[in-house]
Image (tube, rainbow, N blue to C red; front, top):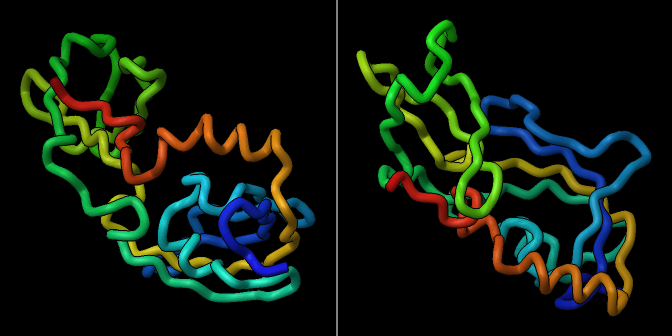
Amino acid sequence: MKIQNRTYVAIEYTLSLDSKEVVDRTEPGQSFGFVFGGSQVITGLEKGLEGMEKGQKAKLTVEPEEGYGQPRTELYCEIPRQNFPSNMDIEPNMIFESDGPNGPVRFRVKELKEDVVMADLNHPLAGERLHFEVNIVEVREASAEELAAAEAQSSCAPESCACCSTTCD
């Protein structure tokens, strides 16, 4: 069976950046499964996998526009320093998690100013070219339960990051 809409796909993968840094991978013997066409993975990965079959391997490169997008300046915001513990040493690139209107939101410290912390709410891989090495482990018709779960998740596709349209307002 070929990978197409409404099929269940399981892959083993390694994800790296242009720098060759590995940023994600499946554990040996474990796979990542999803319903193809269900907005559960980034667009560029789906495009690269379409039509493949169980047992095939591929190296796929996904440009930022079909991955997590380019960084958006409207997702940079200033958070008053007083919102952080007074004894905390905050440094650029530190990662924090906070409660947002749609649940937890992760942000990276972009810059420190005297009274504010400049937060970057973009996805951590925004602006990055992504390199996938994939092995197709399984392709089959998706079950009714898997299709329903994919439908429930479809409103939170990677294109709608940062974490479900959180803004800095």
